[in-house]
Image (cartoon, rainbow, N blue to C red; front, side):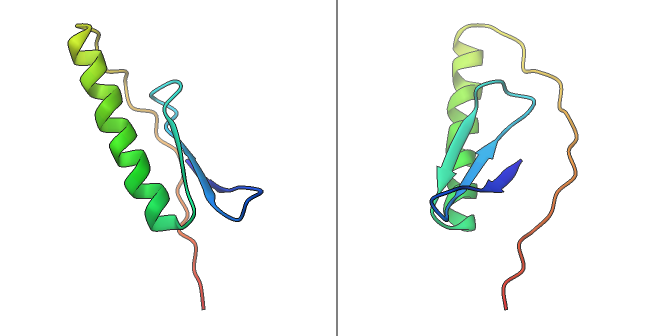
Length: 66
């Protein structure tokens, strides 16, 4: 889930991965940063021999700029 934050950037959370949160000044930065955070989260789960949580579907919207 991606939301505009108070600093005119974006905050991204992954509902199915508790605590997996990242930010970016632009939409693309936020997506790149959360992708890296997800990869790290999944690596830690693997190292700890923990199951990957079941996916939670959320409605998505892409920002449109003129």
